[in-house]
View (cartoon, rainbow, N blue to C red):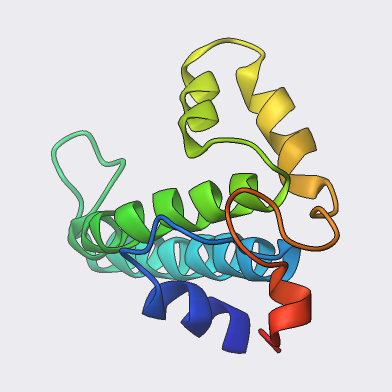
Length: 123
C-alpha cells in the first residue's frame, strides 16, 4: 500500500524517477479499486444507458487518470526514456513495447532525469 500512496502523493510530479514497485503497485491497486467500484455500480444498477460504466467507476477513472500518467512518465524516466513515449499506446503494438519497458530494471546511479530512487531511499 505504501507504494500506491507514494504514487498518489506525487500525482502531479512529472519529474524524477519511479521504481518498478511504485508503478506496479499503483497500477494493480487502481485496477482493483476500479473493478470493485464497477461491481458496486453493477449491483446497484448505477450504470449508464449502455450498462458498461457506472457512476463510481467513472469517478475512480477520472481520479486515477493524471496519477497514472505521471507515474508512467517517472517509470520511463527510470529507464532513461522520455515520458512522451507513452504516446506509443495509440499504435497497435506500442502497448507491448511499453509493457516491456515498464518491466525493465532502472538505470543504476543517476541519469538525465535524476538520482536512482533505490539509492535515494524511496522505501
